[in-house]
Image 1 (tube, one colour):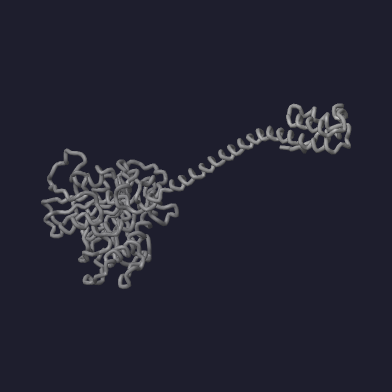
Image 2 (cartoon, helix red, strand yellow):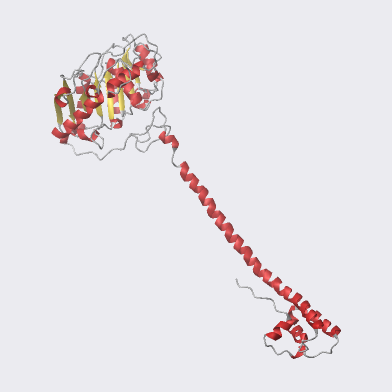
Length: 428
């Protein structure tokens, strides 16, 4: 806002005003002084200017003009009202301050990153079922799924050896026929590895039953011998490290020599690539990662019997799976303080199931191990001939089932309610 200089009464003459009152009055400065007092009245200012005079040389009158300037100060008071407009400007600045509070709301946006989700403490948008990680042990989130392919609604069965797909496969039942089965008319969209008992190769009855339920089943050939180098060691990592070296071929235990070509994971990758080429209508390639050289394990599952039951459980601790079922297990392989029993699991405990028999001498260990690993519920009892439960959820929702009339067996080679529960009714 522009400001203009204050004008004394005589200065007004310099602007060319013809003010006759300024020439009147006798040379006596007193009278002029009284007139100056009148000048103090803002409304009479123009009269004061008339008194300032054509006399011009009357310095005293000029001084009275200064008093007139006091009148001008009154005008400045009016300008002070305009100053209150300036106060309004401050109010506007306050509004800007409110906008700063919006910046604080931006901090709320930071909270929206949901650190709990990344550590597995909260629900993940990609979990299946949605939010499955919430309320159960589990690290991380499921890998996002690509669109599901079109399948043909038929039964698919294939046999091929590990050695036929990879000349570097030179141990671990490499010449045995691996088995790939699925009934796509009932497809569940879970790729289930079947892991046999100690020293065994592909061919468990549980694999055929799972395929009939709509699971993509791969009975993988691998080195299923007990490779723990020293059953007397107190090394709490030895069991987990040995089993995971069998899984991915990464060296963890110096005395165990499982190459990548002889590992469970690599043979599964090669099998899915092979099946995707020869049987695209079977949907096998859906489980491959974008690079076609990995498996999306959060849509996979591991199902094992005995030695395989423990192996499936250990894989689930270190790899985020969609489902894990241990039949006659899991056990700690003579190492009850093994770390895999108590560390946070990559797979949520409500995706894991243990089925074992009371006639199995280790059933007490299986019960304790499942609880230590955070598998849902306390042990419930049933028998192999029992009808399906009539209450919901079945078995009280427990994932730890003791079949009182059975011993050390694979359980789900044929139809049983507890198998329906672990594989189907539970929503997997």
